[in-house]
Image (tube, rainbow, N blue to C red):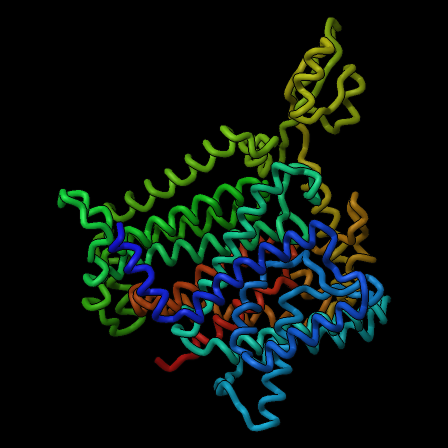
Length: 560
């Protein structure tokens, strides 16, 4: 045991600055959430806010690289606002850190203290610029011109963050340096979501945690991306086994015990624990779009294990795309690796469900929620006992229940209603979300038909589509339709071409390398994790999405 801690101390001593920054990122994430819940954020006084900005600017000027890694760690803090309400706009921690890091780089360039080399930009880097330009063009022709212009500026700020990440992450080695900051914040976000579900007063939607995001579906997209990243890490550890990682952590008296305590197994254990936490949180969001995205990611991971599970880096030098396609078809599938991966993931899911139900982390019937994806939703009703009335198994709407002396109740009301002598039943109704989305899509296509070139502008979308029960403006419920409405045809084409380029090139490199290129694996799985849930959501203005796009372009345009 002492030898183990000595090895840990040796690892930290190699790069103590990174260790301290990682610890600071973890603590700052916790405090940001805590202060937001206490009401200490946003700042109440303008003077305090300006003083804080000056402090962060001095920090960024002193060490812009440190400010950048904290920016990466803050990407998940979507509902934490720093700006006083008197200013009239929301400023998230990552937006402040990103803007001041860019400013510090510009100032250092002016005074001749350059800290980083600019990347070699490609034609694909022009696509985010066209996306931002599309928002301004749409703002001129929309109904809410002032609001459209304000939202177009916000959209352009995400493009600026894209180029900040492009500057700092130009290789796989640089990506590896920032991943711990992203994952450590992700761990805090996931654990907070679980804790939040035990305190429904902190949730936007009762019973559905939103953690540091504005709504549960956005959290679901983020968790799906985290899931994809963890699965790629797991695949990389399993596939690229290194003999130097076979050294012992504990020196047990019995040699058989030493086989279970080496560095590789410790890494896998860390990944599986993280996967368990992410899976629990993903289930608690009750986000069916995120569940679908996670299912697609898991199926892709299993296919990866089946086809490339035992390929070695040393033994598989790709000779060409089509030859690798032919090799993938002819080569025997690795069923042992497939069932090992499937069994471990099934175990994670079973443990997650067990923890959720044993500790009563949710009031939702998760099975019924998953089944309602097909269009029907199971609900619980309380009916007047002793009446000779037959309640149908399927109803058209909850208003129909009054005809049978029944009413729709929540699960926590069941025991109360039973004590009152009510008869508790379960019936099916058409999922109201399906009808809502159908109406939204009809309205969206009507607007696109009327404004096919310029759209209606980012600020007009909520005005045109209406509001939900909470008074929040509705979105297009599809990221591509949202972009077309907000940035017009120019922004839509730029966004679609960018994603198609990333998807196609990452898949080609993945096949060509026989899944040995971890960069293409990360880009491909990350894109799947983002696109699938966003077919039913409009998460275009999420900080981690634009950071991912920049990293993906950097990795895929490398010459080596």
